[in-house]
Image 1 (cartoon, rainbow, N blue to C red):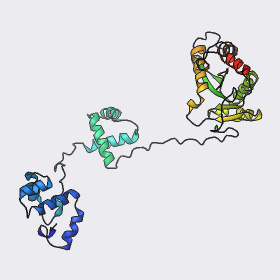
Image 2: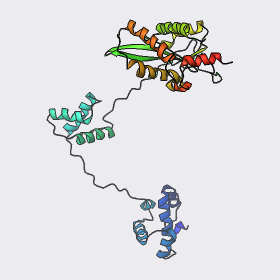
Image 3: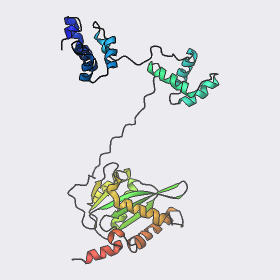
Image 4: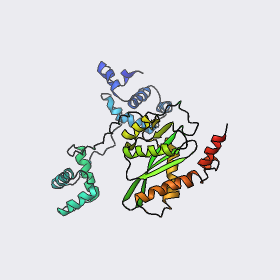
Length: 327
């Protein structure tokens, strides 16, 4: 491309070519091409219209290659907002005093001070102040996650650990029980992964000490040996509960955070308690009255009588009888 014919022959002129955009270089190229070719041929060659060619030819200044750049579409004369200094200053003061209040609330405060202004106007003033750096928005504080407590015994369930027999894995979880408005008790629920055998007790709270007592009851009532227990990261399954598992030689597996589906058996068991026991319970709502009723229903109905779809519509007790009878 013979640039010297269209722009002054100087080192400075050539260096300026690097400073223009790709589009400007294309325009420079077709203007140079048109010096030795008809306009119609130039337009076909570069895929432009004649009006485009003549527009850029008229605009081009050989001493200023930036004349081939696209011009800003912004109007030369922009309407300036007709806001009074007093209004702008008052909006700034109110926003700094009440940083979490939106423009709707600020409008109410401004009207109390005698300013007749709309929400959209207040919004534009706020954006104007932000652009100028006059208005500093408060930094949103992100609550840092607490450091996870160190487990003294529990571990993640190893991938190679296989659950094949009753007792290989008991899942334990808690359930909120609300017999009366404003009254909340905590139910401890345990479900065997293989036989679906269940056990439950309701207590005044979910503490590590009460979780330990629940474990002791579970061990006494369970018709098979418990080899491993799986729980979530609730505080009730630390301390006393964890030490009790260790003392009894029961492996304790703790779920990763936010993974309740991995405790699906006891989650389904809790749903059964909500739908089939607590929603129908009409007895005494005192704790010492509810505890034996819950245990009776679990033993006589859930374990001995209720058909379980996952067991082929037999009860957990029937499943255990068949399991023990099989060679």
